[in-house]
Length: 97
Image (cartoon, rainbow, N blue to C red; front, side):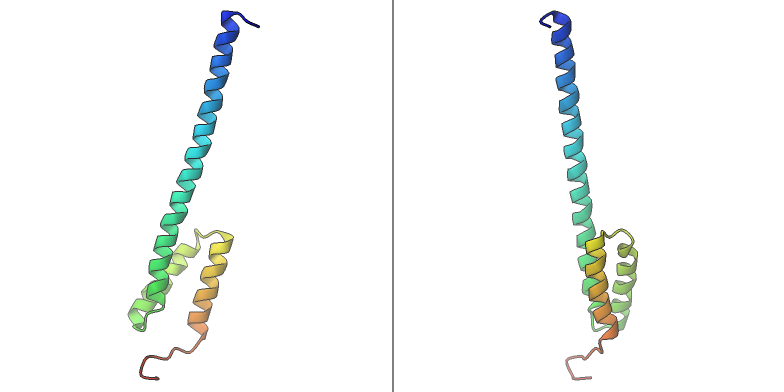
């Protein structure tokens, strides 16, 4: 258990463990970056969807529909709640119309 072969084996095992830990950390980091990018696009789309201008609202809702496909369950529920409120609530502009 103390010979050069065992030392090499332990070194190899340590390298494999370090590589696995780095791979997991990179995957988690990449996933977090993807979610952050998704939220930035969702914010943009929801901002447009709340516009008083019909064309901007249509573009925003179309973008939300595409983004919805990549949403997590929680994100989908949030987007669904916001867009449902936008679509089913009568809109009143600043002139009371």
